[in-house]
Length: 432
Image (cartoon, rainbow, N blue to C red; front, side, top):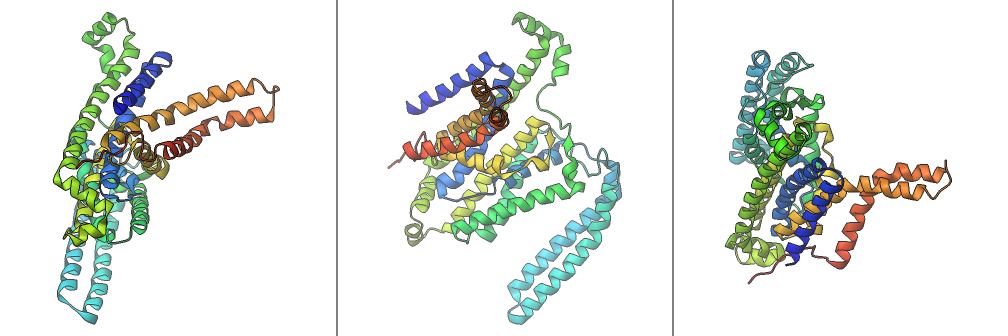
């Protein structure tokens, strides 16, 4: 009943935005809340199920964005002709180098192993750069104002959502194999550092996704507003509803997005709940609550942590691809820890870690406040300024500070919830 009431209140708040502001704004909040809810669900799988403190959410969301670019954009034939073979050769040389290093470290011992490792790293790096650098230069020289990259596969962008999950899962597996043996606080630092490295790579490797020049005009899985406005069936539908076709086209497109995102969220929620209620879920909670006892009972804690880290990261990667699909562009410079790490953690903590429905509620609540705080802050500050003398320096300062009210509210909400409901708005249910 508590969860039902809270979700109903959240729905009424969105309806209120539609009635008193605009339905376009309300649906925009809804769509971003659905994507944020999927990210929060991924973090809850890691933290709520197994107690893994992942501070690299930003990097996994960005990997989903890379997937959207590589899957949906058209291939650039001239770039492939200029440097595609060189990139392929560099990839082969890198794989051979890694394989040789693994082989040497497995079969050699002592000083011989150290010397062989150093020689293979230096020699392999030199060989890869000899193939890679000329290829990258040739690719980035191909019409850099519009492309300067290899492009993608030209497939439907919806397929990129699954590919984004695969990309994030693959990188999470590598990170987990390296850093899951660390203590929890060191693991958090490692994930944050690696996510920053991923963003830096995306900003600088123009041949892959144009770097900071961004990729715009990504294809959409829903109709374009301009096409709807010229379609007879849509104009008749708008007229029957008493709507302006231009305004209604934006609402219709956002509703289509909401339907797609909602279906994905429901599917992931169902799978997450099934996993949580399964013996695997009970084992993960046992490891979270008492790692030493779980190890004493013969459980491979590191292997189980790797599983849940990969699964949660995959969910975040799916959400990252969906976000780029909604925006229609990939902009590596916009990925920052405040939006893609701190806010997601606040959503999970406020909603209730360990409870999938709580994480979803927290995502809706926090994103709603994050968006509406600026509008409410301006109205509040304007009301306060009206009581001050005209031209007051304090009044000017209050108006300038209005957009920053959202940061104050995030901290206030977090403190209030931790004080009066430490386990979140919808706490984790304990089962026998």
